[in-house]
Image (cartoon, rainbow, N blue to C red; front, side):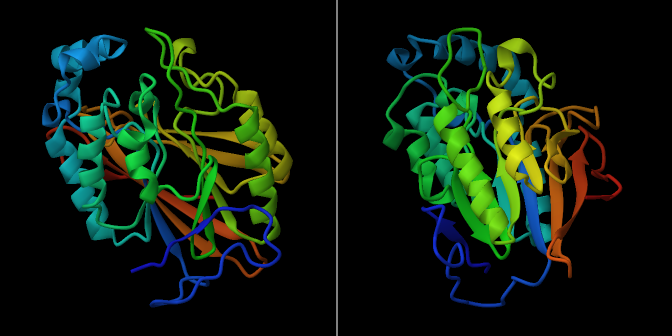
Length: 317
């Protein structure tokens, strides 16, 4: 199994990490990442108690019972995960919203789900995971083994790939699902991008909310996308991954050497016949080039309700 390493600091004197080999060295081979998001695991597995609903969670619980439980189906998610398992990927990049209300019981259920992943996994939280202020250790903090050394942004490595996890998940007022990065994360992200770029790593940034303005409506958008965009424009990245809007998208942000691709993916449990909103995952194949750069090939596997799975033509970056 692929050895995964984490990076706590951002300016080590030598390589970002020492990687003692436990098996096959993947540093010069193609690394395959599975990007999925927004599984929204069923709340019925851990129903909220009355006192846990006397806040913003009240409306999320009502929404789940009336509508969303019919849209996010565990059997569809299971189909996606079996497909990922058969693809033999090196890493799963999960961009948030494992839960619906961020309840301690939901987070424990998500923990058990993470323990059954078909491949190593890197996780960041989404807005549903931090719906209200709650005890970190009893909620999202349970997933820290699938994150890396905190604070955010964290870094996890697989071969020459650096997965950089940004958190845009913050509690918000009622009827809002906005995200915020903040100045501290923005400064740390720029430093991490600089250091990992200096060391020639393939930098893939994970964030829940779309960092490109216009992809999400105002009440669901990232409130400070300019902070994220500034770091990418100054230091660059090879790719950005996000979720949140439950639609598979391809956009970009300016980088110092050209456009940086920004990939969004539909909810991994979505029941839909629309190829862009049906449950899906992105297969990202990363191959080092002789010139020190990387070729990234992306195909999307999607699962329209009641129909065979589909695969998009590969897009090369």
